[in-house]
Image (cartoon, rainbow, N blue to C red; front, side):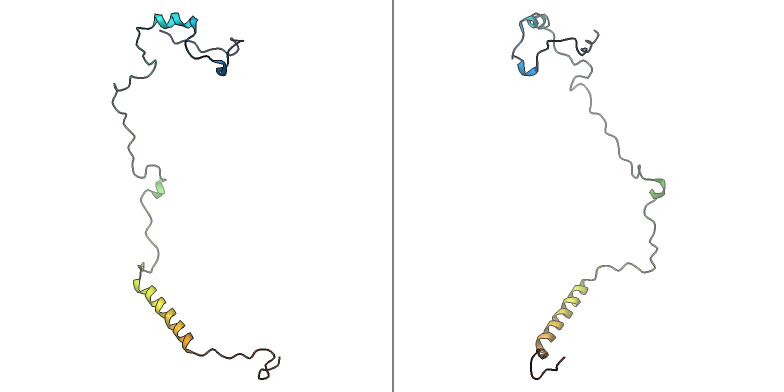
Length: 124
């Protein structure tokens, strides 16, 4: 009934490597297999699958791992100004201003700047 002791390092000097293993059962192990052929396999230390109920998972508790100073929730805002929400007309007003500026720019003639070397220009 006791578990088999663990192997001690260095007791098997001529131990085969896994790469040299041959498939099948060795002839010296056939007697042990025949001796235990009618014994059903039983897990050593764990329960048989399907005989136990599902384990209960831990339940979450709100703010369990938060420092005590932060458990009450966020502090109230100190801002004197009320929060201004999204203004849907703000983008429209911006686009209207950009459109008016572009229209005004296209309707005005471009100012003439004298090029260097022009007789009408001022010498620097």
